[in-house]
Image (tube, rainbow, N blue to C red; front, side, top):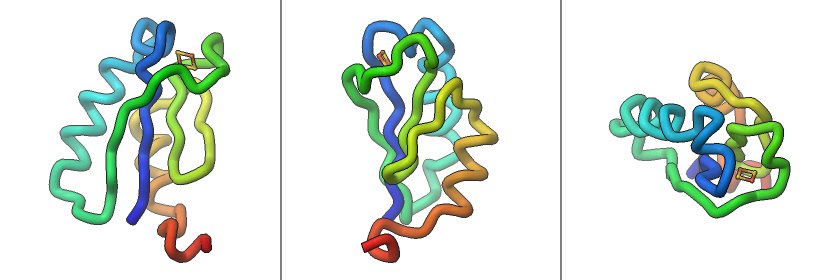
Length: 80
Ligand code: FES
């Protein structure tokens, strides 16, 4: 299972995080191998919208960048 966490804290939604989350929900709705979640603030607010793919933070993330990272990332089981 791969995990994508979109920051929905104080700032990231205003920096495009809301649209990013909606786009990812649409793109990932058929993917049974990906768990998409939102989260409270993860820290680097000024660099948002921030997304975590497994354990890697993507700053100023874009949908395609998240998808590329997701497709190249090992599953969490493979990382362990
Ligand atoms: S609100 Fe996203 S890092 Fe703080």
